[in-house]
Structure formats: structure tokens, C-alpha cells
Image 1 (cartoon, rainbow, N blue to C red):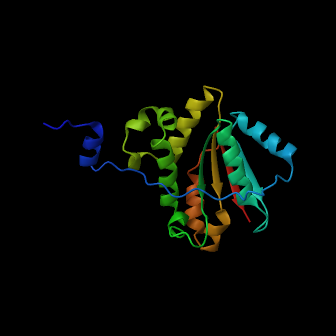
Image 2 (image 1 turned 90 degrees about the vertical axis):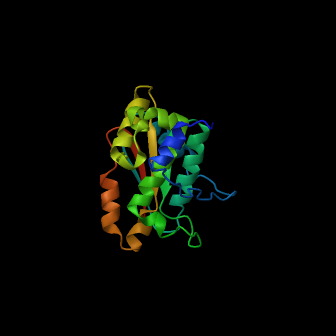
Image 3 (image 1 turned 60 degrees about the vertical axis):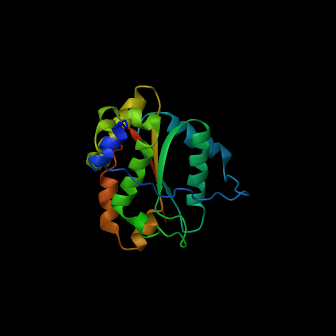
Amino acid sequence: MEKIYFHHVRKAALWFEPKPLNQNFPVPKDFVLFDPDLFEEIVSKLSKSEGGILIFHGTAGVGKSTFLSFLYQELKKRDFLVVRHHYFISLTEKSYYERLKKDRAIESIKHQFFSNQLFRESLGELANKNPREVKIKELLEASSRFFSTRNKSLIVIIDGLDHVLREDDKKELIEFLTDLPVSQTCILLENA
């Protein structure tokens, strides 16, 4: 007789499994920080669980996405709690148009939470709910509360907003950004 595990029950119940999107925006080997002191100041600000929004703004091609990818890598090395969504990786990527959609951006972020033990633990009872039923705002607020009680920040990096606007998906972008809480979560946005 074969044993039945919880993952078998979830599958039989048509439990939603959030799918990932590639989030690996490459940082060139010759990348140099424009201002190491400012970088450390940003990291210091992110280490405080105060919430809020930081916006990195500049014209196309100046390195905002590269900087945010570098920042992500550095935050991970320093054991910060960080998730991200890149609206743009490259024009040759097969999921280019898919990743511009609000629902796929949310699904990709949910995947990062439900597939990581620490992030999953931060969700409390939400971790036992079908991920399809968990609202992104609810998920981020629960996780932020959990980590703030441990004097840690949850950082969400959203990059490439200008690509959504170029594809004329302004309504989707506004809906997505409206769903993100800022009271306890640091959210980094990039726009050209």
C-alpha cells in the first residue's frame, strides 16, 4: 500500500502551485558602484524595519536595473530578506510579455514565498491556505509583521516599470502597485 502525503492531497484538491519567472537580471563582471558610500547608506536604511518606498529614477540605459540586481545580490549575501520581480530581463526571453502581466508578477512573488522555508514560515496561517486565495497584500503584510518582530526588514524589489508602461499596461501596473503595502515593507521601484 502506497503512503499518501500532504502534497498528494494538495494535488488531488487542485491546489495552486505558484510558478516562478526568471529573475536573474545579469550584473556585468566589470560593474562598478557609482558611489560606495551612498550604496552603504541605502543598505543601512533598508536594514531598519520602517517600511516605505525608495524609487530609483533615471533615463533608459543608465544602469538602474543593473544597480538593483547588484543590490539584490549584496542584500542576499548579507542575509537580508528580499524578493524581487523584474518586468524586463531581455527581449529574447520567451516570457517577455507574460512577465508584464500583474497576475504573473504576483504569482512569481508568491512562488518566492511558498518555495522558501523561512518565507513560508513568515506567513503563519497563510502558509496553509491555497496560494491562489492569498492576496499579495495580505502575504506581504503577514511576512513583514513576522520579520519586524525579529527586527528584520522584508524588502521587495520591483524593477522595470517603464517596460510595462511601454506595452500600454498602465492599468495593470496601477492595480499591482496598489496591492503592495508600504507600512512595513521596503519596496524599491525603477522607472525611466
